[in-house]
Amino acid sequence: MLYDLTVPAYQNGLNALSGELARGLSWGTDNGVGELQFAVARLAPDMFPLASQIRFTCAQALQPLARLGAGEVPEFAEDAVDFAGMQDQIAAALVFLDTVDPAALGDDLNRPVSFTLPNGMTFDMTALDYLRDWAQPQFYFHRVAAYAVLRHMGVPLGKADYVSYMMRHLRPGTAPAA
Image (cartoon, rainbow, N blue to C red; front, side):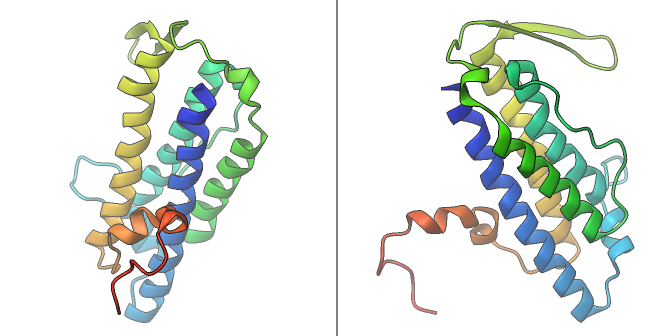
């Protein structure tokens, strides 16, 4: 159950993010926006730049799994400085996700989970509360921020790009005509 609530969603989100980055690189090349401009772009002065949002998205896909029993996860200590580095981080996260054993995460939604933030605040909750109230919101916050930075820079992305993985569920003959 814990596996089903995490790993597939993280894989979907990271694969879609990889596609968005590829589109951003292509659009930037065609429109004179350099990779470094993208890497340091941010939505507001007090927000992290795109490269950090990518790193945090990857980390937020892996940290919860470590806390739930998947073992040691790769760390992304520094922001990437170009699209290849950001794609490498996503690829490394996806490789790890492919190795997660569902049995390692278990099915006990009520088991205790604790974590401490760098500022010293410690939280005690159940596995379900942790996933619903912390892990999933953290992943999607950084995932959406990365998407929004790309949009802010002018990359022509839409909701279909954000949820590109949904196309495998599309009923034949129901897509609007181009």
